[in-house]
Length: 218
Image (spheres, helix red, strand yellow):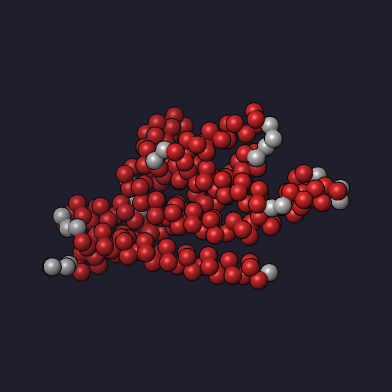
């Protein structure tokens, strides 16, 4: 096979630029997903049906439809209603954040519900409110248990960000497709993209394993 290293060298700066955007999209989406997922996870376990129903359907929609379709709907349907000039990177960030929120809400719900109910009752007997008990007793314990699934969600999100290429967000996969279109080559662009994704996911895996070990010893 005639493998052309020269075109990989030519596109390397673009791949690095795309990798930075990929990381930025993933970090931004997981950060927003953590904030909104925590709130949604708490409302999701509300004893009141009217409170939890909208969040149940939000989670059902974003977990039950393809991320590819969500990106298209948000970029071509939602963003034109709130932005005069649509930025594909912003659309991708919004779509990834909304999707991550649904999955992280379920992770928070499972983590909170895994804590023994007696912990909440003990905190209340000490005079804490529900919010104080959740903040100081329940969530810190639940968070340790949530690190592995949150790490998996981060890795999935990192890889799923490649779908943003379909709306021309200049992330890693976008430049792979650009290289393939310019030179009509398959192995060089997609193998380069795959290796960069592999480096990113393995680095993230080692980092998460380290954090998990540190949290386990505390």
